[in-house]
Each structure stands twice: as structure tokens, then as C-alpha cells.
Length: 87
Image (cartoon, rainbow, N blue to C red; front, top):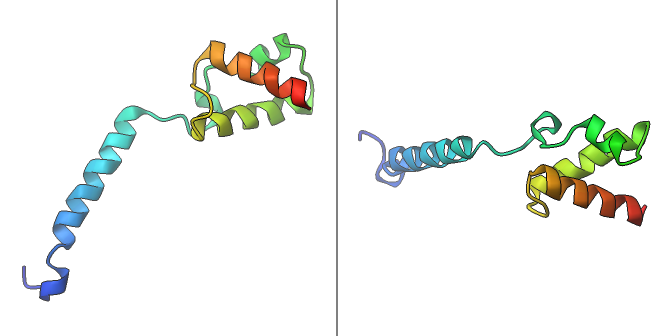
């Protein structure tokens, strides 16, 4: 409380930020390929091979992060098939 008046709200701001971070962590968001509900074997089973598997997994991760697709096996496989049709 010994801070200048314009900085006194910092403790409250910090507590709000900590709460938001805690909320995000509690949601366990998918932010890496290893957290996807599908893996390379699932993608290979769809007929993809080689480097396109890694590329497709990256595309799926982006889709989940951007909320274009839910991180469920069924939705990711459907999304992957549609991506394959566009390429």
C-alpha cells in the first residue's frame, strides 16, 4: 500500500490474472500435438502417409486451438478427411 496511488490496483490486477490463469489451466486446453485425441496411426488409417501426417496433425492442432474443431476423435477424423479433400 506504500505505492503511489496510481499503482495501488496492481495487487488486485495480479489476483485477477492469477485466477484467469488458474481457470485456463483447469480447462486443460489442447496446445500441443501430443494432447490431440488422434495420433499419427489414426491419420495413417485414413490413407495419409509420410510428411503429410505431421502436416495434418499440425493443421488439426491449429483447428482445435482456433475452436474450429473440438478435440474429439470423431470430429478430428472428419476434419482431417475434409482437409485431405481440399489439398
